[in-house]
Length: 418
Image (tube, rainbow, N blue to C red; front, top):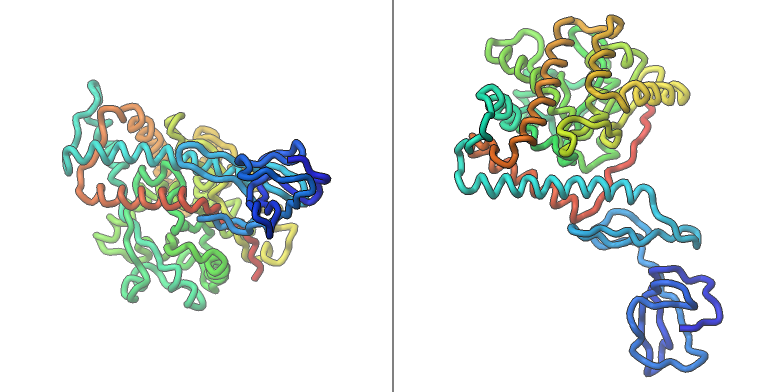
């Protein structure tokens, strides 16, 4: 349609043509010639026809973002564009999130295939690929079955004050702890959107947070991220102090599988002046910058899951916050497992028990090897040894499908000042 002026119109805008007349119709601007509409006009409009732009839509269906953007299909995803200040441009944030959704869809397809195959022979172990050793089979079974971790209720933390109690005390408190199994399937993509793992420094040998500074920073972050319902924090999630024999076994297994906790959900780093010099926080920080890559059969750097808040001097000085954030990202943001191992075994990274370094790094290499073996044997071998595994995978499927449908990007990083 030829128009006198295109000023004030943008691509994707709905317009009224000859409003109040017998040939009134609406259409969507698809391009500018003068104006090219998305669909053919229903009527012949005479010269002097009025074209009036409708009020822009501020919220897309099933989206938490404001503005104008394109549609999402699970098969084909297209970004139409974002109108900002009268100029049309492609939103970098939307494009980045589309890539995440595309990875999640790949996981949906993978887990759908697993579920279909497992449905043929529930509760059994399928025949492994020819030449697959018993050792490989056992390692894959170990990581695909995963481990049950205790998670703290985010609502309980938000309603509490002062330092958080240790694990043994918290187990006696109603509604504070629930157990959730995390396995290799959860690490295939960022699917545990309602979970967060906390990385922090132990300020004393007997209590990581005797004055409750870290707990206060965590509470503020949780209040600003209400979608998070479950929190993993070693002080509250693993047996502490004097342990029974059963608790010693649980603690040892927890350390072996702790890599899963920092690879599956979002990770919140509580940064202070000691953070960069301690082994455990640095190990956890590196894991927070990794994701499982289906194509490379291992880990790949990814900085989208890692958040930070601050305590101590850093909470009071913006320059110190910037320095710590950039230092952590520069040290670990792009490191592969070999580079990370070299740095993590440095003598100046302090740890109470030196053997912890080698136990954790060995477990990490074991997990990476299991990832490769699962992917390599995927056509002929899927471990489904327990009936609850099928239930867990259904939960993962629902979580991923819900995210893809809602197209809701994760909340932005926040800086906490105490």
